Amino acid sequence: MYHYDSLPYASDPFAETHPQALAVLAQLLGLATTPPSACRVLELGCAGGGNLIPMAWHLRDSEFVGIDLEQAQIDTGRALIDELGLCNIELRQGDIATLGDDLGTFDYVIAHGVFSWIPAAVRDALLALYKRVLRPNGVGYISYNTSPGWHVRGMLREMLLFHTQGITDPRKSLDAAQQFLALYAETLRTQTGALSRHLLLEVEGLRTAHPSYLYHEYLETFNQPLLFRDFVELAQSHGLRYLCESRLEAMFPSGLGTMAAEFLESVDDPSRSEQYLDFFAQRTFRQSLLVHDDVRPNLDIDLERLADYACASNLVPPTRLDLRCGKPQVFVSQDGKEVGIGDAQARAMLAILHDSYPSALPLGELAAQAAAAAGGGGADQPGGAGWHSELFGLYANGLVQLQVRPAAFDNSTPVRPRLHALARAWLAQGAPNLPTLRHLPLNIDAFARHLGSCLDGEHDRDALVRKMVDDVRHGTLVLPGKAVDPRQLRGVVAANVDRLLTLFAHNGLFEAG
Image 1 (cartoon, helix red, strand yellow):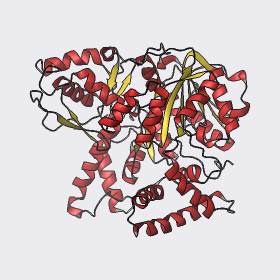
Image 2 (cartoon, rainbow, N blue to C red):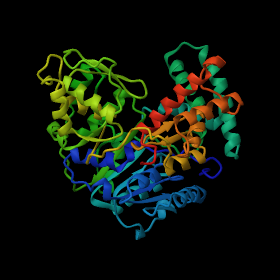
Image 3 (cartoon, one colour):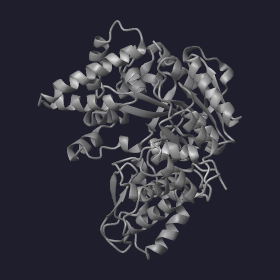
Image 4 (cartoon, rainbow, N blue to C red):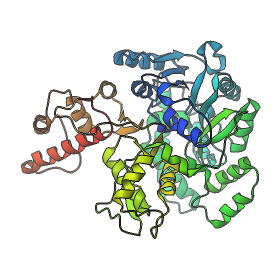
C-alpha cells in the first residue's frame, strides 16, 4: 500500500495549514482560539517534516508533534531537526489507526494529503483521533478529493492502474505511467471533443508534476474522493462539526452566474448548498476545518472586526499609484494574477503593506495612515467599496494574509547577506523551494540555488557578483534565459543577483543582523 521509502512524497510548507491561518479563520467565525505564538500542533502524515519544521522554526514558544507511517521519512525529519537544534518539535513513527492517548491534546490538528488516500476504517480512526485530541476550542484541518468533480481525474487513474498492473517496483510503475501519458497526450491532440481537450490539460499537468504526486495520487492502492455531504456526515458521526473552508472564497458562488447564486440562496441547509456549489464549480479538492460539535460558530462575519487583525501582502502596486483616481487600479500577485482595487484607501494600504512585506501590520493603524495618504478618499469615493470589503475579498481569495498579532521584520538586504539556518538546510537537501517566513514554498532555479550556497555572510554584493560571473565564465553556472553577449555578462549577472537578494530579503530568508 505505502511506498514512501522508495518514492517519498514531496514535503513542502502549506500556508493553509499554519496555525496563524487556522486561528484567524476560526476567530472571524466567533471562536476563541489559542494564540499561534503559544500553541500545540499535531500533524498526521507529516512525511519528512517539510510542513511542520518551518512552523517550529518560526514559532519557538509553540510545540509541534508530527506522525508518519514511514520510519525513513521520520528519520530524515529528525536529522534536520537535530541539525537546526530545535527543541519544540518531535516526529514519531506511528499508525493513525493505533495511536494511543500519550499524544496529549492539541490546539490545532492537521492532515494534509491523507484522508482520501487511506482505507475507510483508517478514515474513521483519524476522525475519532481528532475528537479525542482536539482541545475544546481546537481547530482541525483535513484535505481530501471531492466527488463528483474528481471523476474526470479518476478516469486517468483507472487507465494508469490498468497500464501498470503487475509492476511491483514503484519507480518502474512510475516510468510506465509516464510513457502511457506521453502516448495518451498524442492521441488526445488528434481529437476535438470537449472531454478530450479537458483530459489533455489534465495529462499535460501530470507530465510536469512532481513524480511523487503522480505516483501517490494516481497509482497508490487507495484514493477515494468523497461527496462533501458524506464528509460532513462522517465528521458528525464522530462528534465533529464542519466549520468552513481554509479558503473562504471556496464557499461563495462567485463567477457562477446569477441563476446559480439565486438557486444556492434558496437552499436552506448549508451543507446541501455547499454540495450544490461543488457540483456547479466541478470542485475536485477541499481543505475543510472541523471543530467539536458543541461549538457554535457565527457565520455572519463582521467586517469591522478586520481592524483588530494584522495583515501581510505582497501584491505589487501599479507603477503609477493614483490615490485620487476613482477607477480601480490593478495590483499583481506573485504568480501573475491581476486584481483591480477600487477603494483609494485600500490601494494606499496595499502599497504600504507591499513595501513592508513580510511584516504583518495592524490594520486599524494602517487604515488611519492610508486615509491620510489618500487625502480622505475611500469608501465614499466613486468606484470605491470601502477598505474592509476590499481587504476581506483579497483575504478570502488567498491574496493577502491575516494574522492575530502584528509582526515587524526587516526586509532590507544585509551588507554581507547570510541565509538563516533553515534556508541553508533546505538548500543542502536539494529541495526545489525554500520555506518563506509566510510559510509559502519559494521556487528556486539553479542560478538562485547557486547564489544561495554563497550567502554565507562573508561576501558583500560586489563580491557575490564577481563570484557568479567567474562561475559562469568557467562553466560551473548557467545563466537563466537566453545566451548573453560576453560584454554584457557582468550587467546581466548583477541584475540577477540584485533581484534574488531582494527576493530573499522580502521573504524573510536572511539571518537577522
